[in-house]
Image (spheres, rainbow, N blue to C red):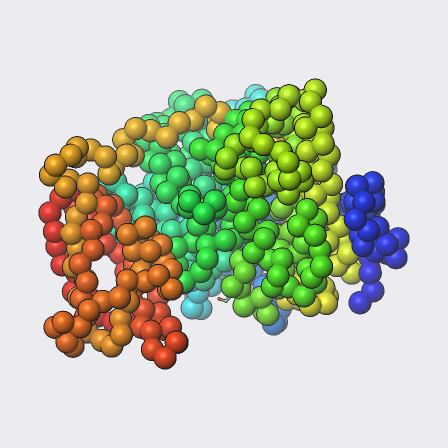
Length: 591
Ligand code: NOJ
Ligand code: NOJ
């Protein structure tokens, strides 16, 4: 392939500290105006590659076949406009105001469009994508997707807060707030959907339903870390804006607390967030890295509860995520562990060949840059047992503790991490074609662009990675000082003796060689290898009795193992909510 420039290739291939930063400087200097121009070219009505789309509509990509991305997705749109709103409100580009006004107008209209997910009041806001003329897309799709309304609310709230600072409260109250309120009400009201009749409208069961449905990759219907994280952020900052506007905010705060509780449940003792509890995946997923950069709040320091980029959990997670790609892509071979590699959505991905994605690799550099901003700002960095393995990438002798900015450990580690961040930019630079265009993916074996060309989200990811590298700090959203509320300790209420913490559940199903796995430790956390065998004592019914945590929403699936082959039940996952005590039986039918 033709490289971005021979000069860049030379530096991208070299591993030295100076060269990494020089490559990133050069690449971003050249790519920044290209990314901005190509991003705007995909926005209607005037974007040169968005012909036929309405005002303010973001086309995911101009590609009209293989894949056809000439649609507008609420997620992509909101991520793109979050970047544009930051650029404008932080004073980086004063030319974008009319684009933002167009965005507001388009979303106010599109919210009203009835679609296969429902009408404006019955779930239609969770529809993932629309035609570019703002009519409903009625083909089969993984719907609903519940990150969209949350991301859109966050972009609009950030804009609203800026306008309040400009004393434009009439517009915020009359134009923005109704749009924001509808999205936030969708986020808290998702419990009204039909499946909820299986669950009491409270507790984990409620949250499971609230935060689940198709993930951001549109493939798995289950709880998804990214969705939960962005829902939490939208409710938290929505409550704050509601209070400022004299609107009711208590439902948003209450649900923000509950969602924050639920967010913690994705942590897995192997040291990463299990991004997705569906489809038999490892759960290592760019989903988590995106969650950390899209909920970055420098005022929150390195708080792990909100998974801040420099938190010990987010760094350990990053190590696990990146490591998952080192051996599976040909273009990563021979790269040492302290240097960046190509990363994709998740290691098991097979969509369009299952390649690295530009936006995923850029997100790694952005998370690291966000972390560097905070360490510098607070004048220290902390290494805990959880983050030790991450820091050992850069210094094998380092140990847990807090290191002030004046120490050599701080200087050495931050310099190495800066270099590490830039080495991910170097990977993207190396595989950017000569015209600077960024597709969705780049080939796992030769680095050539693959799948949708000019992916708008790839350009937005470039702009935000550049901003973070320049030390730009986005507006705070209220993550500082949040604690996990006590009431989410749902499994500790009963005390000793009565077995109140667990419930005995018997699973029965007709079949052959059936195993069971699911979303909790007691069901082996979706591991097909460790799935629990059912017994055939009452053949042809297969059965097993398991003690499960009480008062808990649980997802599970049966799998069949035969001659080394594993067959999963069809989607969606089965769900149940355990009661406070006692025992019960689930009689299921293989799907
Ligand atoms: C299209 C979706 O946009 C993509 O994320 C997914 O991987 C494929 N369909 C396959 O389900
Ligand atoms: C597929 C991605 O998986 C999804 O996240 C995105 O919204 C669409 N493509 C459109 O870019």
